[in-house]
Length: 286
Ligand code: NAD
Image (cartoon, rainbow, N blue to C red; front, top):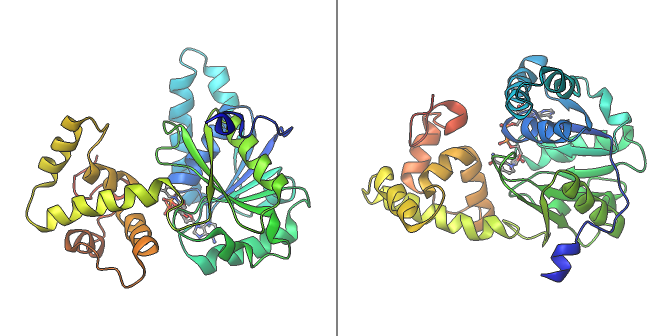
């Protein structure tokens, strides 16, 4: 407990420029939280069109946060810079990757980033289910990469896992924790194991709930029971929030590729129903 309280407080690290790659559910919201705290963020994705929804979400968050202070909201929004070509990599103090959950894609991205980033820039992946070591081994200097694993929704979840591999440098690890503190979140040091810590516990919980759906229990009934028990949201709504595709990837990472997916989950994903982000999952979202 004492060690946790101090984690990230000792490092002298004041990042000003952050580059985020992947402007989806996570990357967009990570960029927003950084800009909210005065950092200048370049936000990269495959096209300007893919970055636009993240900018729109950021505008809403700033409007709410700076209610009655439109200038402040405007300044915050000006600090989120759409950057489809990734120019921001060369100047950033921190580079966070939040692209598709695919090992080869992430490895290729970091090879390119390492060539263009400043030698002292902190490199981090937001992966939920891949091993940081498997991404880092693509780098000339694997010690530079750590995991900075945010939870969804980024704006409300207080915990962030900071993942080190056996190769990660102490400096990268400490700076990552200091960066998390700058975002007013609690950094939790974790090992590079499947699911890290939180998802290793939450994954089986969500999968058991999905198996109950397979057995014919209504999602609403399962969620109502767990909410009555005291959980802030039910496990099926949690699956919708996380994204059904992400839940599949996480399940495979935890139980192995041969894992048998709950039928209800497999059917939804096959139909393109990915949860909140697609408007339809186990529930309908507007
Ligand atoms: P998402 O599908 O919403 O967004 C991914 C974005 O990356 C897309 O906009 C896509 O266009 C872009 N992209 C893909 N390849 C790219 C490339 N080579 N260069 C630039 N952009 C690229 O996904 P997400 O839910 O935001 O997840 C992103 C990462 O965060 C994954 O690694 C996931 O495991 C992790 N994560 C997700 C959650 C969650 O609840 N969704 C929570 C924690 C961590």
